[in-house]
Length: 107
Image (cartoon, rainbow, N blue to C red):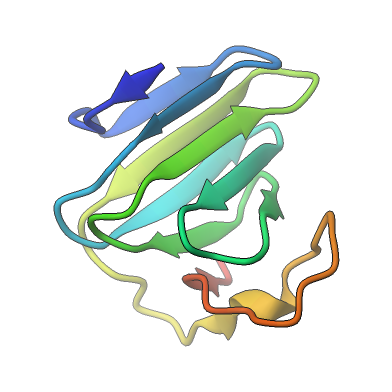
């Protein structure tokens, strides 16, 4: 389902996807369940779990998929206040040589 990410929070049913674009970078907060994140133009996908925060880029297709259980996410326009860790440090479902995705922030 293509959405405009106009709301601050979403529940993604198990095994389903939502996708869309952001007008400006935003923080993606995973509040429950696993989320598979794909960003157009990136060479790798990212598995995120509850408690993780990822900085999403603007004006690129973003696809979020819930795992075997429903996932809850929140979008925040403000950037993380804490130092961000490179996306290359996230667990990756597949090998990739070029990591240019967003940033993850500890919570």
